[in-house]
Image 1 (cartoon, rainbow, N blue to C red):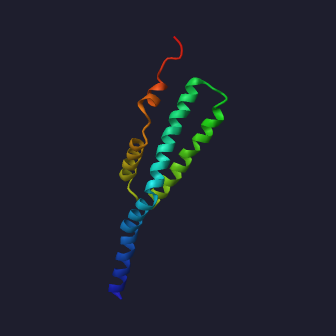
Image 2 (cartoon, rainbow, N blue to C red):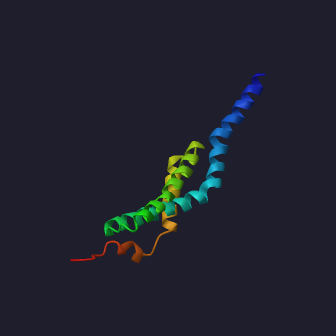
Image 3 (cartoon, rainbow, N blue to C red):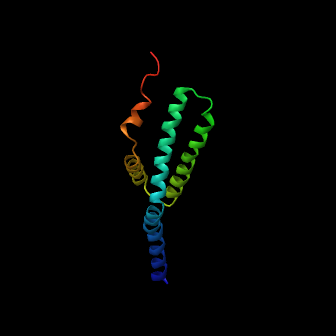
Length: 115
């Protein structure tokens, strides 16, 4: 009986601490990286639209920021399945690097409109 209890404990422990995080990592990796890039882009666009002060585009910013909500949900699922925070941080950085925009797109928001 003791060996059965220890065996079940070890299987459950391996499932919780190893199998679930590794499975969640591979299952959600692409989705998480895509959503990270979308959220990053949405935040950049929102900031730019706020700087321009266009009221017509205000609803657009809210729709774009929904990508951040989806990113946050996926992140929370991965955390609840015990994917370590440093792994998620690395995936986020990797996603932003893979989905970088051209230097023109990044610098356009810093150009003077008026002097």
